[in-house]
Length: 256
Length: 256
DNA sequence: GTAGTCGTCCCGCTGACCGGTACGGTGATC
DNA sequence: GATCACCGTACCGGTCAGCGGGACGACTAC
Image (cartoon, rainbow over all chains, first blue to last red; front, side, top):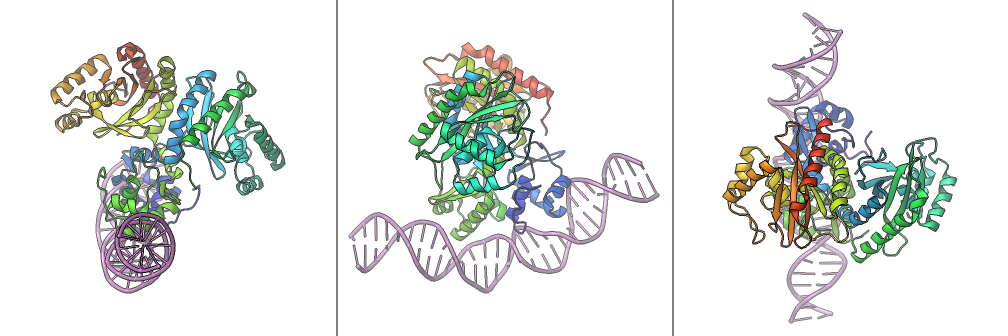
């Protein structure tokens, strides 16, 4: 199920289609599997995959193809995510050290949150998030924060679209969600209570751009229902996010 | 100065040439600058860059082009680096919490170390390393570890090539380096004393593959000469690396 | 043996890609 | 305010890189 159909009439389109055929949890895909997922003719997939290997975007193993380390390197140079990550790391560390729970840094990309960083310890709550992975905005604390600070059009588009149910607690009523978003703007934090995965709770705060009206990213702390009370961490999460906000403002790196 | 000349006679080659024209610290490059760095005709660069934008590998800003978040996402799916990162994070956290110095996770790629993760606090030592960035193997603790466990051919190739001098302390004599590598195999740790940057010291240990003879990656702790004594952390760095080694062996994810 | 799936290779056709060239805008210099 | 240098963008005919149907051999399963 390809996210957005790239142009298959161009080499580049075919190439990225192949690259994006990999999901977060496949390690290695056979040629046949690539053909199945991309819909490309076998001969074409074979050739393009070969070209990708020579260009160090794919690795060839005896079992099939694999996204290469060269691609990792390239991805880490994406300026926005990388500089965000570098600036954020100390703050994320602080949060982790104080809570010893899983800490996330995420940005919004369309209807989804993309996790830029995830740090946790050995006994971290088993969460569905992965670094570089996606989750729908409406069922995560980070997502709600980013949605609350998004431009009205984008916000409206997501609110009007269908809200996928992930757990019995997932908020699928636009009205309820909208009220929560208003609360987020008021309190500067968002909560999530088992809305994306059973047994998990979460609290998030926005990293604001210079004006203070747009959110560049959001920081969250996640823990299991038993030992973890989101309300207990309002202050430190908000403080971390604000600290990062002002640091990011000092070193400007945004754009349109 | 392009790292390795990709094939400029193919669309894909041109595309990756443009992508790789970005170094770790450029945020945004103008079309003219891309033309200058890649050597492509202006019209061609313009077209390919445009194609890259439609394929969400580049972003267009009013100042020029920028590596896109889509590329970051893709890079994070590179299986080796990503699963390594996920497994390693708890161990890196432990190290950071015990030392409060900068902690690195790196793999070898040719003559260089590529940093997969870098974590540190607000007052971290100013090091030249960047997440996703490269450093020569011969002048870093992580590099020496990885080199010591590399196959003899690769090791010999690097030892025989010229060893770039980064600081007055950089080891540029192959014989001396070779003796250090032997010591690494014996002790299971490597040291670096202001060999890559003035004022910085470092200690690293290998993350070994199942057999125990090949290194998948290496973990290091870095600090400033004043407050930081590498010898003081031999045990914990080695323990962290060994812990990760055995965890990685349990969940196999290597390949050829 | 037969039937399925896999990766690889061949090879003639064609349209995607190429890049020299030209144009309009912008800012520096005289 | 004229000139110049440099930028990004757009055009367009020629052609060769890319295309993909099809064939092949290896392997496995029934």
